[in-house]
Amino acid sequence: MFQKILVGVDGSESALRAVDVAANLAKTFDGRLLLLHVVQVSAIAEEALKISATAHLSENPKGILERLSQDVLDAARERGRRVGLTDQQITTLNADGDQARELINAAKRRKVDLIVVGSRGRSRLQGLLLGSVSQKVSALSPCPCVIV
Image (cartoon, rainbow, N blue to C red; front, top):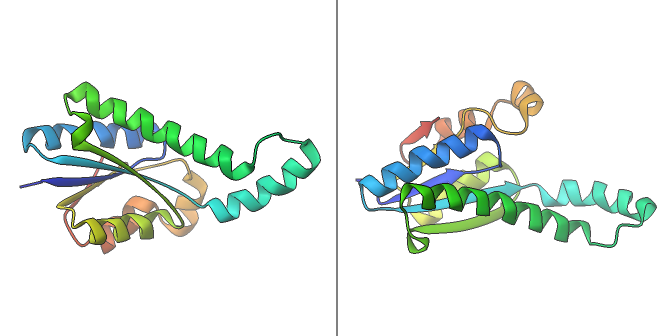
């Protein structure tokens, strides 16, 4: 039934609970878990470059963001392992851009059967002003969507 399950992760508790739900579904249906972390690298990197010029950072801001993204994905992967999924059942992905749009695009490209997202992520103020990622994903999803 749910062979490919896409989960949006951002490191928040809500997203980690979404990983738990999705991992349990993947285990139940002997499916695969796709973990996607989306960062707006261009917007953040521009600000980070300004800061690094004055703070004399030794590492490239894009490298810092990539490392942080990998940390978020590693934590989510570990949650999937705890449920009993193997590394072969878990795929990690990252993207640059609008979180909702990238989740929808990944779901279409990867032909997923289900999208699972947390109800609230890291950007609470943005969610109040523009609508949350979970609201946008559920409205535009090409497949069933579970909001945890």
